[in-house]
Image (cartoon, rainbow, N blue to C red):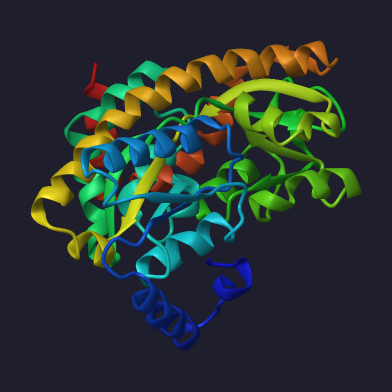
Length: 329
């Protein structure tokens, strides 16, 4: 059994040592370790569970998955690094957690890039998505698929947010990624990067005033109990990535590699079906609980982030990807 204590490693030597222990316990037939910060019934976790069940069925039980949801084995940044260094096998992460480490993902996380969720899905399912997934192999990972993370909006414990002027003075939790910190600063807030698992306590103790995320996460983490204002900004629609340790992937036979890729691709449709249901029920749950909802002035937020967005578009690679996204139906 892998414990969080065993995985709470920092520094190259510690990670390397954990990697040796991993290699020793991952003999033929050992379970595939899959991690997620979300709870067991969250759509991304359910989709990976479905993938594992399908692979177990196809291999007559030769390959099985062991899931660790709810952040049992660390933050998303932790688990990405642990997968890179062979301490675990599969990590589902939000792109904000890997933007700095994998620059090719940055165009997908810029504000107001996607027209809607359908546009994001089409881009991720096409050539752009496939090219970005391939870049993970440069640093010890295999990009298996993109999952949804929905349109992100602002929620807070202070007041309704109508325009960027209402953001002034608010400490807003963001992922530890340059794009997100600059984005929220451009909106007038004080961006505050803290781990995902600390958001509820941060809101409760007023370490932060606000955060930004989707309906499903807002409800599943019960953050709506301490943040009673939801303002629909739809400022970002960056997806999530399903990543696998390249060392573990390379240890598989070619047939098993093909099976993993095929089932990961098929799991996207499973995830999206569950996602659409979860978003709708989560929204209704928090509104029924008395959360105050308002539509923000999205044009005002677009104008606020435009200078920040232009700075990122000065990078030729990012600008080229954004042009392709804009042209994508």
